[in-house]
Length: 382
View 1 (cartoon, rainbow, N blue to C red):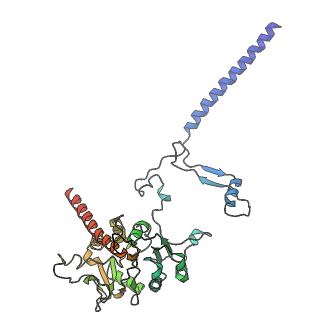
View 2 (spheres, rainbow, N blue to C red):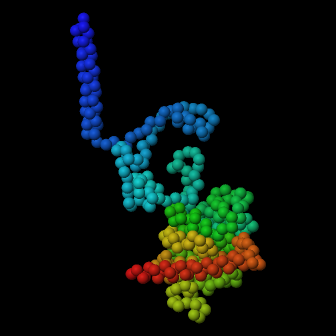
């Protein structure tokens, strides 16, 4: 009996050993088979219908079933052999880890619906962008101005007084884009909201003040003349009896467009340089898409009044004396309403508008110094 018992124990031990060895061999064999197959580059994650139903219920109180959906695995997010690394140096800065087919580098101000097919959202795409920096007190001036622009123009209002909803008294306001930040200038807004990649859908960008009379202005005809005369940077002519600073911007009644003028003796070192040519004011400039891409980069982040910028615009087009001009036959009136100046603050006994004007002049000096320093640094490297 003792011999039989020992024999049974040995058989069980042998069976256990064989099972263990077989398991190990199977694991090793499976590993080598697995690594011999090509890597899987794209897999799907199947989410249960119960989870998708929960997501749907976040938007509605009516429970309903939802079929299971699958999503591409997040490629390039880890070091797993199943997620290959992506790096495309020609992608926009910061988007190098993305496949080029998913990169959307540009945007626009076209409003979108919350429902329906995205491809059916836009029945009409405006080709031009018009921005005004406004306070509610000037609503009647802006209302008159907006009516001079057809449906081909997208209206964007920058509100420096925070009063946005009150503009809904005008029918067009519901189709406009409204951006609000208190006591800021149009160049502050332009630097932050009009990046070239954001306005890339528009052929021309108008960056206008709020105190412009437009009785003699037609936007569609203006665009026609800008294209006809090859103007990359332009402005309407100014009525000479109101708010005129430079001879270059004064309307001429005997032509469609002019590109040069005669200023006071000694003001122009070269007849093809500002303010005798290659010059428009910052009051009501109009930029082509290509010109704006350059001008935006020249706007300083901390200099918000834009003084001095008009003398440097020529750097963004070539030849500047041919591609910068004033459209005479579509002209405006500068009404000289110091509304933004009154948004300043009294300091050292000065009126609010005086403090604003002092900063404008100081910014002009700072911008000139920065531009001169940048020029010298560049040419010293050559």
